Length: 295
Image (cartoon, rainbow, N blue to C red; front, side, top):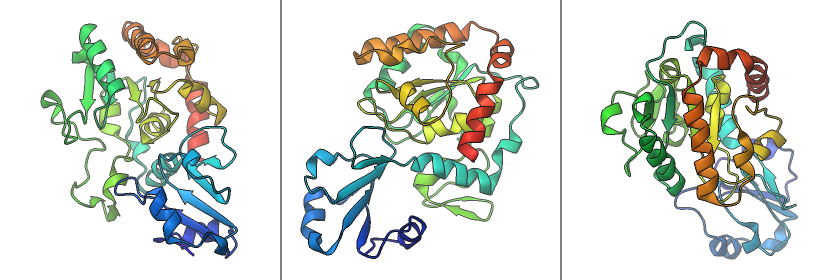
């Protein structure tokens, strides 16, 4: 039994016919009670859920497993980097990395980009900090209003450049679902800035999205801000980070605001450094991460 169009995944994962694959939508999702009341548990050996953010503690039935882009140690929860996969698939269709200017050849107007997405507490904190540091004019700020509009003074910046927006975005002849269009590599923004500040979607659990995947694909240094152990868990997935350039010890700090503040001070210190010199030290890291996400 499959919900929606998951026949492909059911076949790809080689699941037997008596296992069920169920998609829980990020918005307007099926609640746990609706799920448990709508199926006969006895019919299935296993029930696999695909979702972004859901807690197995609310599902006592040990037949239920979940795939999500979250790293944890629950034996019934499995990390599946859907957002990374989608960034990779769009890359294969659009090849936007071909439009990136090499670090040695570019002359950006800005030091950083920070494409924030939906306002949340840690994003407010970082925004306020860089304002206090008086370096906000060296940032391209994206998607920082309740309606996901651009900030007023950066209204000309559209993540991804030349594609049509709407209910279904189009890139060339490719129709792209709205939730996928944010996975398009923002090559125009990357060409006009040096570094990326990644404020991940969540700050209370390690949830990896396109926000982290895009600078990896774009071979950029990024400062990762979110939950404790975001950096540690990214490394556990095989990626390398930038401890030779910035002090990533903030990743171990329990207190949210102390951790975010320490990360912001790394942004401030990075601001003062020569980008060409910085990138000369991290080419191996950038290439390793690019190979990992594309292969």
